[in-house]
Image (cartoon, rainbow, N blue to C red; front, top):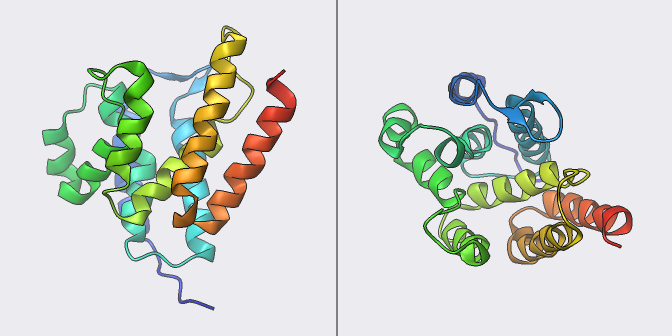
Length: 184
């Protein structure tokens, strides 16, 4: 069995607290729960994977899991994020951030291209994020939007699955469940 590297609780707590403050007024869509719920689910997926698979930079994975939406969904700037967490975390979070200036149909491809330039620990955050997001679609989504989300999930799996066999398999199961229950 490969040696599994540990992540530091102090770095987790620091990122968790920062994310909680940044997202404090946001709700997890369709649930009425604090947005921090989603970030907790993503980080839980990462922690489970890190217990089973070797990672060179486990703290990068844990911190990016908790911070992956701060640039996209809050007023936090890249400068502030880098001051708090350094360039490597900021680069990872930035790669996980959809660029709003890019046409919506090209945003996933652009993000995946930028993620692939990052260490595998950033790749696995994208897998974990999509695992967390493959819940029942919001009630206001059209059939076409639900199907497009399923299709984009398959693309994420195909492109990034090799970064974590464990999360790749979890995502595939979620994709299959989503297909069976929400794609008609």
